[in-house]
Image (tube, rainbow, N blue to C red):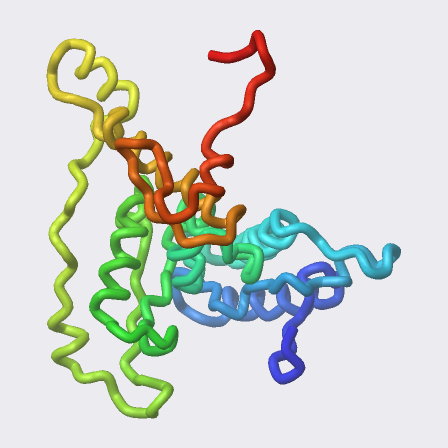
Length: 262
């Protein structure tokens, strides 16, 4: 971890014992309804050598780091529920994990799995902390990403910041209270299979029909072409051509040997 931010390792037995005793004391002597595991529960991509003490230089994979924190919080909830069986669990996640799922590699946090793992997932909806230029637009995008995950809105608590830590000034109350989420733009799905059956019966069309999914797939594949060619592409979908970078068109399809053409 950062030298100014030391944390205990979930792979150290002594550290787990100390943490467990703290939760044991808390559950015995304090009255509460649940536990929120704070955002300190993360592991970056350089942690943690303690996972493999007999193999110097080996670090755990992303999955192993994420699982280690799930297992640690599970263990702590077991300790708490010995004394408070009805206690509920929640865990803080950085917003970046929702907006950029690949950032699990830097935090060992996974939004979708947390929804299944805890009673509540507390997403840090803090645009000022994240340095967002447009706080409202940033919050809209975060809400859209959460809503796109089945059960996302029902299982998520959004944590707002009341102070802009960059300037050490309070966020105006009207800015917090006045935020209104955007109107839904995607019709709720009745389920992938049911959509298909209904469409076969002539009762509407699937939400992700070929006309829609084709454009999404085309965009993603063109991103690969742009990356491999190192160029910004101007795409002509009707002609299946790249007018400003014809040399990149070689990535659009394979060259087949004689006798194997389609």
